[in-house]
Image 1: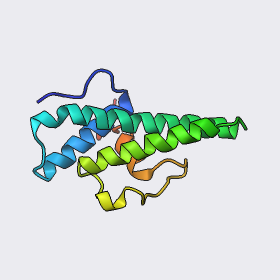
Image 2: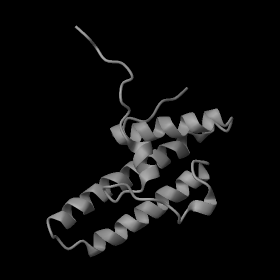
Image 3: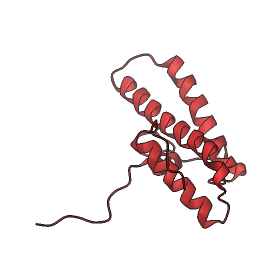
Image 4: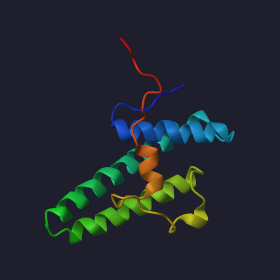
Length: 122
């Protein structure tokens, strides 16, 4: 099975694995979906990075009107792609919750870096 592409950052890789795992659990995964999955993970990671950047700029009292529009577009595209990949229902494209950082909580959870399930002791 093909893994995530090298161009994805850690949050994109986390999203890639989580979405593929969900599709596999639903019996909906097909190997040819990998190209679309690359796009989903890339877009979701892009949205999270952009949302964090916009938030930092707002904290620094910088004008971000153009970035707000770009962020809204990135968010809309990410949710549309997630709906196409059966992660969210199409009926909830416009219904979402924001986390404490003002980022779509579903996308943020998908992009959260995987924590190791083990710890090393000496």
